[in-house]
Length: 138
Image 1 (cartoon, rainbow, N blue to C red):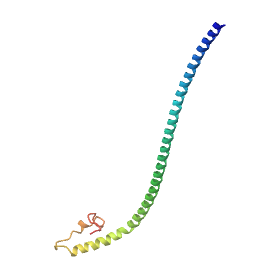
Image 2: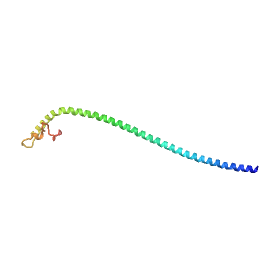
Image 3: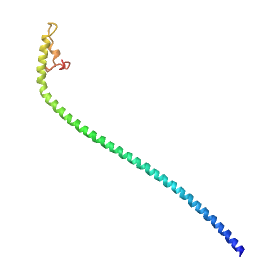
Image 4: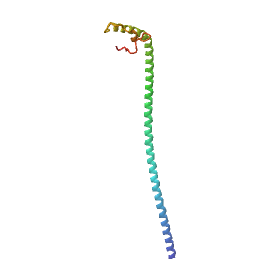
């Protein structure tokens, strides 16, 4: 009976060692799982920050797009207004050019430094308009 108890005790000790090894293995695996979960958590936080940055960038691009659209509308409106003004100016410009050209030529003729013959064609274009070399600032 003592021998039987010693054998059972030895057998129990061996089983206890196996259980200890299994528990140690489970503890190691749990530690590895915890490390992996922590890495996934860190990756999720970084991803959330990245998504937040992308969201801010998209909002800024939307704001720039709206500003650009508003500027384009203003430019189109200004272009239409300038076109209308140019159209109005083009209808009155020929008569003004003829009047201005005659007045300018008269002034030049009266204030010429010499009495030699004045070349009117040099100052007027083929249609009687002032030469493109003359500007209204004179």
